[in-house]
Image 1 (cartoon, rainbow, N blue to C red):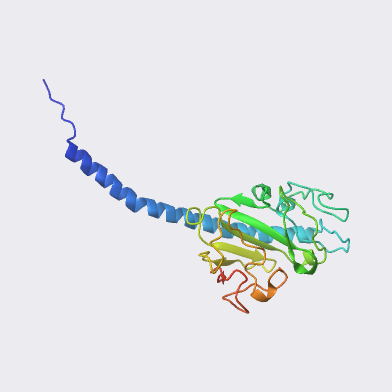
Image 2: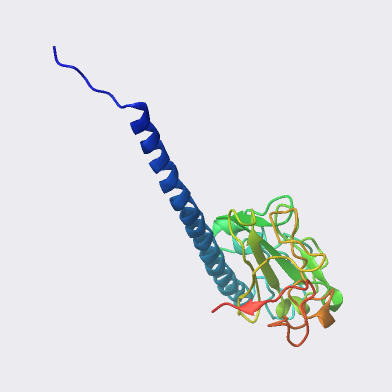
Length: 237
């Protein structure tokens, strides 16, 4: 009768060890690839937001002070998920159709932010004097926007939903269209931006002289002064 030979204990241990070694080598590479992919997607999304804001303003669909000059929009307004604001109040205008931003970016949660592909996105528009207001929970106008300043100013940040697991770098962009990045390793009392537990304030990337406002200049390589959040913000290469 023919004997059937199985694996010895030593052979099984060798195979198991080889699998563990391969996994130890491959998993960090897979995580690094995932982080890089999510960060690249975030940069691309920030650039799309710049284009979407330009379309929203040029369309003139938002004109709270009825002066004939279009104003910048909220995520939910650009995505056509909620009616735009008008001179009678929030969400009383028409829907933006066609929308200028992907529908996925109009799904504003209870924290007033959007989560997509491992990154969180927040948008701020200026109130009187340039102080920021954030998008309302669920999307759209929180009231308090300054119509004149909304014709010239907005700012958007993106940061990881899980620091070092979905991404590392944080990004910012405004009406000028240049995306800036920070290593997001924290500085001083600021911890790494992470999910909704540690979010950048709207003035975070602005030079310290513009603290509390979003109508000033970004701090680029700590010029013209250090950033409000103490981190170093650099242009995307």
